[in-house]
Image (cartoon, rainbow, N blue to C red; front, side):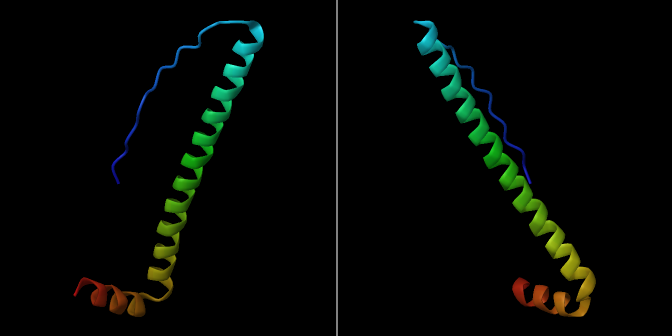
Length: 72
């Protein structure tokens, strides 16, 4: 699976202290949302890989039969 990364640089315009704090809070919320989304995506991929491995180990003959059917 390829890894795609992006770097975004944001500049906060300093108006008043209150507006500056609001901008930082908003950027923190965005950062937190992106972190949670990335964590959920990676957890989902890990779960799928683990599930497939356990199926392969537990039901080897059945797994091979299903996998062969999918390849055709």
